[in-house]
Length: 357
Image 1 (cartoon, rainbow, N blue to C red):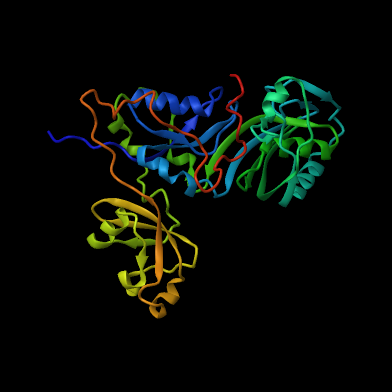
Image 2: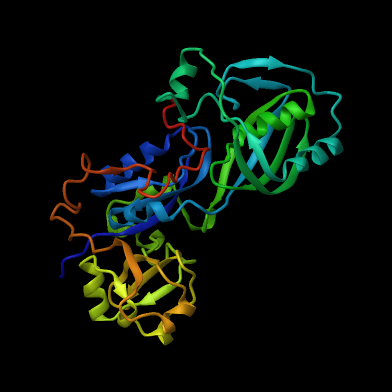
């Protein structure tokens, strides 16, 4: 029997309630002997749903993922505000909701569509003067926070059974759904907090692709993850693709830039200057992520020695499984946070793995 190679890529976990995102990563590393792993877009402990997990070479994808819209199923409870803006917190304000009309609620919620400004919750990992807000919140200290612009793309009302209001929301990266719920409650006039939160999409990844936590715990070896594993190349479906020949791949693997003379314009996809591309080969899959220094339309007319594509990340296959079934040292090796080299990929609902469960 041949030696199995390591697993690279990502898969989607349907995170259960009451578990922090970091513990999901730790359990996957322990169970499958994975050397490097991380998650993209932290979910609150009380929240469930789509949690992308990157493994080994997949951790290099982190800066290039997480920019797409997020979608959530939300249940809002009217009449109470809490210090965490969800049901796990202490009630800090109560107001009657009984006079609220369902039709007015639906109309009011839709006023939050488009670009809005929201104040992050005190229980968040945003830092002020170098200190995470959640540490101040635990001491009962509240400080002024700057508003942040986010965008609400779509809101679909699902059910109103007062005092509960259920809706589905699509929003930009960095949106705090807890803040959205709090602000909706204040605009209604009776206050509100989140009773339920489930992420059903994160960028291109959906709940339909997810493996449940119960099913994951039944698996005993890394290769059993294969039905749910998304390859490195398939994890970037929107990136224009350059198919590299042996010579180009060798050059990129040495970290060298590609000049205009290295490329055949007729084989290139359409792209703009400054756009990210992926280079792949039929044999090896994803080889590199590139940044274009020229528009595709300009390459035919550019000087042969001008830089056309610059490598940003280079990918290699992970080492083979050890005789024990794991890869490398497993637990105790590298954990990759949701911060990448280009931007912060945490998605706001977001940075609360500090909360006790």
